[in-house]
Amino acid sequence: MQIKVLGSAAAEGWPALFCECDICKYAWKHKGKDVRRRTSYLLNDDVMIDYGPDVYGQSLQFDIDLSKIGAIFFTHSHDDHCDPVEFAWRRQGFSVVTKDLHIYANQTTLNRIQQRLMNGDWERYHIIPHLTLPGVPFQFKQYKVMPILAQHAAYPELPLNYIIQDAEGKTALIGNDTGWWCDASWEHLKAYKLDIAIIEATMGPKYFDHTRGHLGTGAAVKVRDELKRLGVIDDNTLVAVNHFSHNGLGLHKDMEAFFNPQGIQVCYDGYVLKK
Ligand SMILES: [Zn+2]
Ligand SMILES: [Zn+2]
Ligand SMILES: [Zn+2]
Image (cartoon, rainbow, N blue to C red; front, top):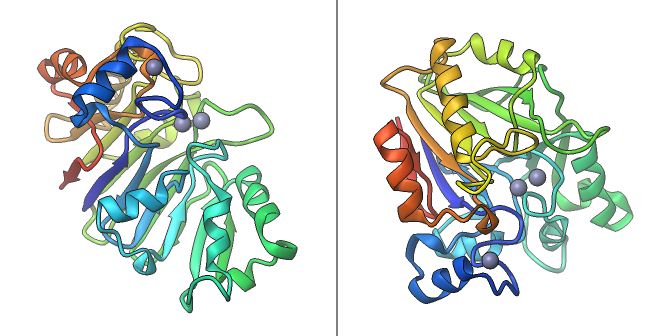
């Protein structure tokens, strides 16, 4: 199983659009791993998790043949994870598209995308929508997927994290955006043994213990520790943090200095997790 990080920033990117803060100035000057696009992942070469406003640039930067993407699993409807405009070009007259694209998403996200399509007509865009609910597993090709409820977007949206198992039995968790999970989500997690666990650390060192809607760096370590206590991960699990906000003040080198000694990797754009 291979997961490529196509973006590692929170909503406003890093450096953030229009931002005058010192962290963003540093990123502009030094570039490298502190330049972060909006969070998205490529699973092997046929599934994407989230499809945000940086998708066109990401497809060029990371050499992604989008015509090979058979499915997109959406975590939630927020603008940094879902950019409906970028589906518009699948319509006849723009791009030549013959293959179906399966979209797995909660109702709020499906509604957002459908509103952007001419007459709300999925077929015209070769898109097959699937309403995806927490705790209700689904299968796409060789992938067995368990969506779990994230603690994030406001009700009635049901934001999702994903536990994804491939044909070889390798299992990965996509754990953004979320704060501390509800009991039901922890219960679902307990049934798995993860090879890869991507946790979020949006709030950085500034909001170290933050657990509502997002995690600070200290809270991310606590999530890792709880996953370990429950037997969901062990020393062989590749654990990484992702989805960072400049407002959390953690430059890449500072995040590595904090996380690496604790056995946690820090994602950056282009980072590949393989098991
Ligand atoms: Zn986000
Ligand atoms: Zn900034
Ligand atoms: Zn969000």
